[in-house]
Image (cartoon, rainbow, N blue to C red; front, side, top):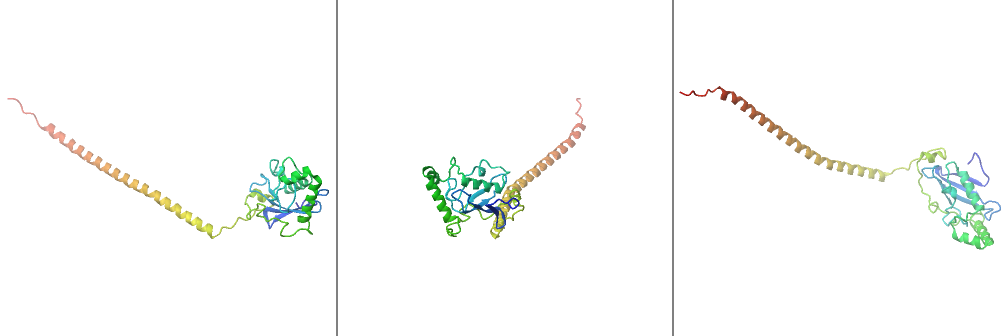
Length: 246
């Protein structure tokens, strides 16, 4: 953004978070938004730049492709996204959308209907909203900017290296407090208990098997002893001569 600045387009990481950016967009000259300064929030997903950023208007604006929450219906933020697109090009696309709304894919039904029914009334409404919310003289802290939570932004960023590469650094991982430590300890205890319970039947089975093996060995020893005694008795029987007949 700083290497190739574009007049009317500014953006920087929000509070050092490389996954959240705050941008300011000047209303295009010749459009009903001329003279206004519109604030936007950009949130980079964990798979950025393989996935498009989430871009929303914080400043209220009357536009066919922007709803009341500030969501933007723009093809480069959806199906036409390319990893080659920079944040600067995304903001330029948003600026172009202010000049040339896309009525084939509207997001604000009232703005679309007014444009088609009364173009001059549409332009007047856009200028009125711009004066009220996007100009310093008519804006106020209470009505001009949406809170980050209303714009769908989470307080904590992701830790993907791909997203970090967009800003040249790696954000810090969220801290894990005492609740996480206690939860981990409980999980460890539960695992140890389950392991001990599972080990009991195995120990019992092993003892039973050992007893059966010992009994089998004893039976084999008795059988061998009997066979040995029987073998010794056979020669004596052979040594006795049969009596002669007289």
